[in-house]
Image (cartoon, rainbow, N blue to C red; front, side, top):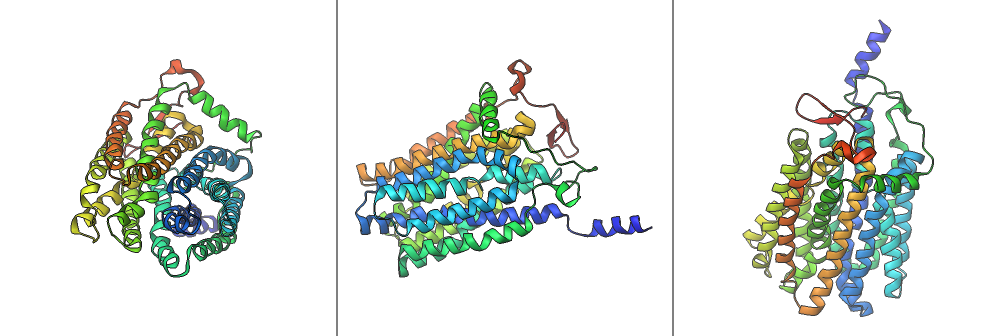
Amino acid sequence: MDVHLARARAGRRIHRAWWVAGAALLAVVVAGAFSTLPGLLTGPLHEEFGWSRGSIGLAASVNMVLYGLSAPFAAALMDRFGLRRVVVAALLVVASGAGLTTVMATAWQFTLYWGLLVGLGTGAMATAFGATVAQRWFVHRRGLVTGIIASGSVFGQMVFLPVLSWVVDHHGWRPSLVSMVLAACATAPLIWLVLRDHPADVGRAPYGADRYVAKPVPADGTGRRAVSVLLATARTGPLWLTAGAFAICGASTNGIMWTHFTPAAHDHGMPATTASSLLAAVGVFNVIGTVVSGWATDRGDPRRLLAVFFTLRGLLLMCLPLLMSATVRPSMVVFVALFGLLDLATVPPVVALCREFYGGDGAIVFGWVGAAHQVGAALAAYGGGAARDAFGTYAPVWPALGALCAVAALLSLMARRPSPADGPAGPRPVQQRPGGSRLPDGA
């Protein structure tokens, strides 16, 4: 009788997996807020230090590259040392980098503090982190949870961007960095208290599982594992197709919009605070779009979803130069809403493809695919600034990125499961679950 009562009470409680997902979401929200700052700092740093926009964009590019490259190693480190140790350490590294940025005096210091430290720290809390949480703690609703956690990055931008923009305008750029240092330091102890590495740590089965899952023994050589997974999967076509499409995704979102939209709008006479508010509005719709995408990924073909998302995004970017003006017109509001719905909607389908293709190594593979995303973003961040310096306008950038989105749509449709001839890098068998979603055996 007591056993049945305990089970009934456990059934009425919120599963611990949702609390873990909430803690992961909080960390991603704070990390996402840091990505809003380069666009706000471009003007003030140019005026105070006389640095070119290209040199400022270089620091942002290094940040994005390391953000991407650190993700697969962070996923492997999470396997070895646990989720919360890695995430708390990452928050402290981010806080250190942002704090040191307030006392810099040269462009290379900006590249070191912001590019290196903040890039490494935020990369540990990239979308590979959310994929790891979803894979360990959830059997059902994995796509939905991945979408929710991924949306946290843009939600952080949405929440912090207007506030940070106001702080920069009224108090300077240094206080804005100090406020983010405080946010990161305040989040670290909360993450330590709530986040857990595996359901077995609290004696629970993953959400939706019908049996208890033992916690895997931590493996040695985490860095070697990240590299060995890359070397093994590099022999398969889907990795390159998915990574290529995701690199274009990074170029057409983080690389250009979050770094150069505000200065580009300012070139047309729009106040920086207004442009920042538009980006924050993009974040509102981004949350909706990413969650809906996660829901759709659980039920549909991820390849077709990606092709649709990239095609629509490319059309929007090609139209953007026609929409910019000193005031916010209704057409710009429509652009903000549609672009926001599409911005991060690509993440859940790409996570699902990595899991489908590469099974238990899916989180690490997605980390490498995420690295390609950030390389694309870095090239666009630097190239956008260089184009502005060379041509005096951002006009050539938008149609070029729109055309690349069409290429990404084609690459997405071409991705197919590796054949058995590809050897051990191929995927584990896939079992069909009611509702149409698929999971590798043993997931």
